[in-house]
Image 1 (tube, rainbow, N blue to C red):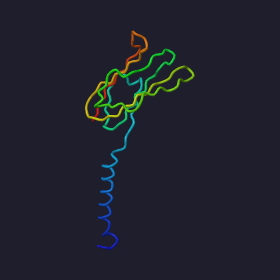
Image 2: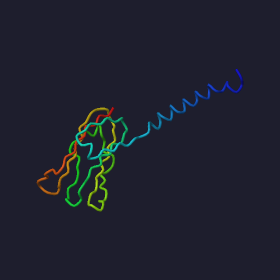
Image 3: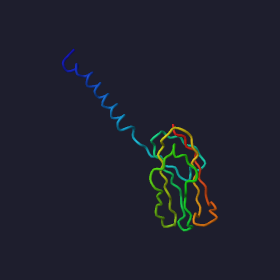
Image 4: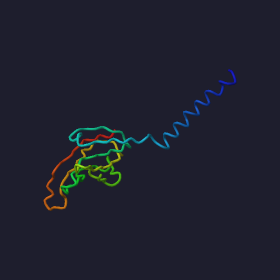
Length: 134
C-alpha cells in the first residue's frame, strides 16, 4: 500500500468518531416550528427537542389575552414567558407561546382568548392543535 493512502482509513475512522461524539455531546440541532391561527383544529407531528411556537392574532384594544387552558407539561414543556408583540398600525398584534417537545406522545394543546379580568371569563376565541412528539 502506498504511503499516502495507508493513513486514509484511520483518518476516515477518526472523522466518523469525532462526528459521533459531537452528535452525542451537543445533540441534534434544535428546530423551531411556528403554527398560527391558520393551523387551528389541525394535527402536527414533531421530533423531540423541537421548539413549538404558537403565534396567535390578538386584539389589544379588546383587553382579551390568550392563555393555555390544556397542556401536558411532560410532553410540551413551556419554554419561556408568553410574548405579546406590539400592535401594527391597524391594531393587530400577536401573542407567542413557546414549548419544547420533551417526551414522546400525543397531546391536545388548547388556548383560549378571553377577558380574564372579568368575572365571566367568556371565551372570545378558542385554539386547538393536536401535537404528536415522535
